[in-house]
Length: 637
Image 1 (tube, rainbow, N blue to C red):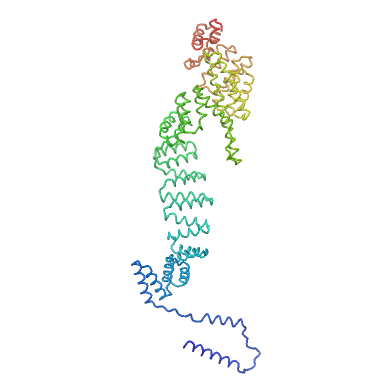
Image 2: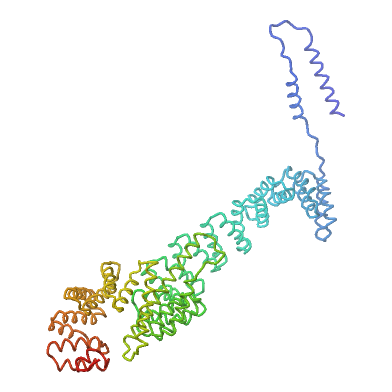
């Protein structure tokens, strides 16, 4: 009543003042301002703002009593009574932020989300300590209410308050971000959450998927690195190295691999993976260090060491290392095949064709037919034409009739596949033609060959010629194939065609020194042997000299000296021819009928009939029906 009375008295006082102000006054030149309706509204608003708010009745003693009763009920497991006392405590002290959020939490537990949001909103306006849990409750309730902006606001406030240490809140925030598809923020949150859950597989895969979709390759690499540091999982480190290699960050990848000190499969794979990014010598040194010093003693690393040694001509070491690795690579066909191929080449170069075939067959068994052409080549090299030709027939038929699968519609891939198929077809033509020529040469050297075998040799050369022509119609840039054609034409006695090819070949500069010397000698000797004119013989002789200058210390030196001597013989320079023959290691040529033919002819030309007879006798043992033998001993063919 006092308050009402005071207001009434105040009103009377104001009225009195107004009455006084309306009394007559002295006249002045300035009139009193008149209040407008707008002025009155402003004054009214200011007065209302200053008006005293109604006081809230607070009974702290009752609030405390109800709070303790609630806690007691919770300890007893009587949640219903506990919820009742929580509400009573909050009713007794409606200014308590803590009690307000406590009631809201219990409403959530009871499934009263809408009512809980109302109470939480009300509590959030009260004074008191603001906690991460309170913000989290508001955020979760706003999620259920579908109020996106408020959700985000309270999630951020809650996480900031907890310094991003609340794992549950982080996870709930991530679910919210998934819902609103905020991928950028989600990546940041997952980056915070993953270490707390020890890079849980499901979350890790989701983060990985997000980063890949966003094209953040560097972040992907960092993710794998962090996961490895946290878990020690070598698969994570392996993925990191793969990523670094894909981005061509080779130095970083090598630095990671340089720390490896065990022989786990992942260590092996990472070591092998980085080696191609290094220069040859550096890669070899790095592989040896990993194997012999760092403990990455695995057969695949040893295989790489052997491969490198083969490439640089360290054949003895290569053979030792490849043989030591090959039997331990049975469960790793990719690496095993590399060892097989190296050993095929090593044994073939040593003319140990049985071993070459053994490893070529092993390679074929693990390569799904990809090395079948190599196997056919080795069979042909070993004169096993009965095995080589069926393989080549099968390969020829396959690549001649190759067609892409119906599902291939991408034009770029289709063109690439067609190009690869043509290359395979050309390879078959090359290998098949050389196998035919090889068998023909064997048949031609066979002293017991009957007419059928001679006919087969001619047929082989004709078939080879057709294959080589087909090859050149598709691609005339392979000079080694051109060389095969030139030599085959010479054996078919199509000399002018052969020599045109040789003329083209000797002008090329892309042959290796050994290949160039061989080409020069073959062409030169062919001109000398044909002996059509002095000019051609002299040209052939000069070509042989050029070959000798290149191969003066090589394995082919004795053969080239024989060609030189024969050129001198054709030119009538018998003394010089004999001197050249005496430079040849006759032990190496003891089974070569051409050598003894030339030696006998030169000795006979010099009048050394006794020596000539010895040479022709040796030739006779090798080839009793050789025309030179029949002529010297006075027998007819």
